[in-house]
Image (cartoon, rainbow, N blue to C red; front, side, top):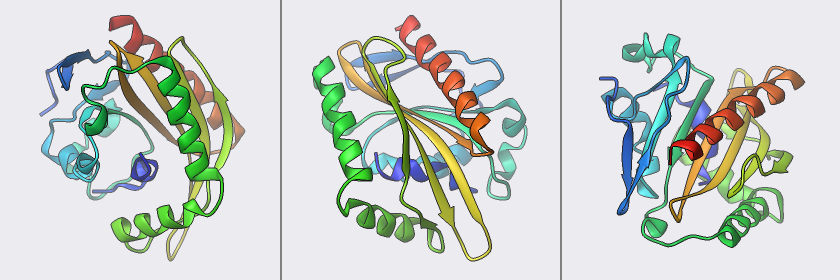
Length: 212
């Protein structure tokens, strides 16, 4: 969960599958206008392999424009995408609504309380080398749909030459008695970015629930 927050900084065959197995449960993936699900593309797998230590990547969506440049991902930066993923420890765990609240509170304590973030920053430094993550700011907690808990947050990343701000939505979703995560990222460009991200995130979450 923690390393997922760094996803927007990655510079490193379109998938025809519309579903992914999470343990013994089949999660149907939504079709999103203007975006393509491409978790099985080798260049995307280079990006997502770091997440596989903790859980399966069920879906990875980028915009149509970025997909046209998918063979150049190591040379470009993209800032509008989302990932659906799970946790190996919960693949076949029968989740409940109370688990959503527990996971949300646990993430909040880890990121925004005590000194836990120093450990996260050190982990990010190990993975990305010259990148330093600033402590995130919690923007909002809300529930866009039944059986969903969402946290909006803003985080800054700094390297030797510049600073980047990313606004992200982290969702804990109960689908078919399984807890699935969805993280949506957009580069921060003023307050309007938060509204844009929230609208896009809510649309994706709604479609994911409708088809499952």
